[in-house]
Image (tube, rainbow, N blue to C red):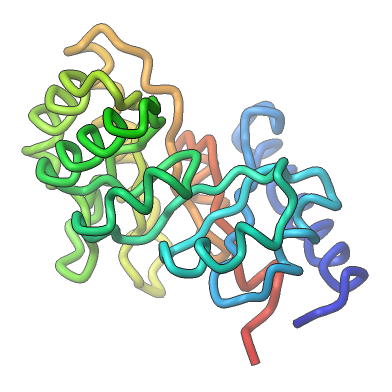
Length: 230
């Protein structure tokens, strides 16, 4: 695990990249949230994020949050960004403040049932496979309208926007096309349902500039902040 001082240097560098990307795209930097991804790192990674004023962290697995949450500050908000099996919906509802990776109609219904039992309204994002990557989870573009309709019919879920993961490709135009596609899908859904879908969670360490240019509101960064796990 890196030291706090090393983390602050990394955090400063990522902030500079975000600021430069916003300047180039003529966007307000305050419209972009940085979500530190603490997966595979110790609970110290969470405390580092809180230390620099980041109040939310992203995790990929229910089990990791189950272990870390009791050891961390109560002020931290936990966001699930990894694939969620429907049989873990009850635990996820209990542990997370928002689930970004809602990727099936079955999961929407399972989460709504779990929330009803817990008397909790849960914010979610719908994950779209906007890059048409066979290795990625997410609704297809063609099924996004049905997905949003199903989510809106779930009284204990609050859909706040969309999320995607760009194809793993060295060609930056692949990520650019994926992000622009998600923005187009969001705009079409907003028009169809007369609904603001404010959040566009897209972009990571390697493609945050392309994501910001395409309209991202949340950048998910792990290794550039915390380094690789030893």
